[in-house]
Length: 134
Image (cartoon, rainbow, N blue to C red; front, side):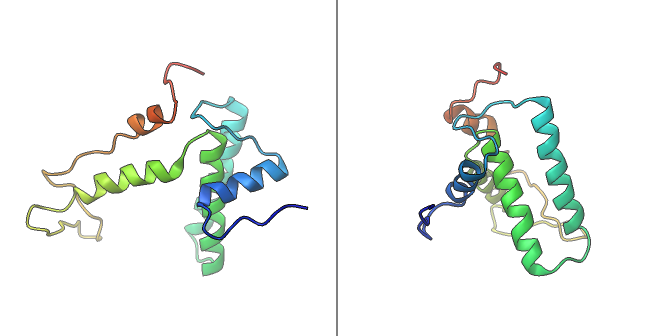
């Protein structure tokens, strides 16, 4: 019998519990995966993106992309929460010095002169990734 994970567990920990129980690959250090596994994860992601592009029930929208995205990160050994934190840091630099946001006509936030791109490579290296290894 599987023990319940506390509700305060991080999303990645919950997905890891699923992967450990049901068998999909997991890694604890960022690494490239086999082309076959990468293609499979890509197919799963594409399937979820295609479903989000059409009208789907909100409960489906909340469920499906979340577990596949976190699962794909886990398969690659990536701490996705740390990556999201770095992306958030960079995104917040899109604010102008006056605190205003510049937007495109469709509402997309634009990068201004204060924007500092995320360094996801540094985050992955801090997790043990060596870009030269396969």
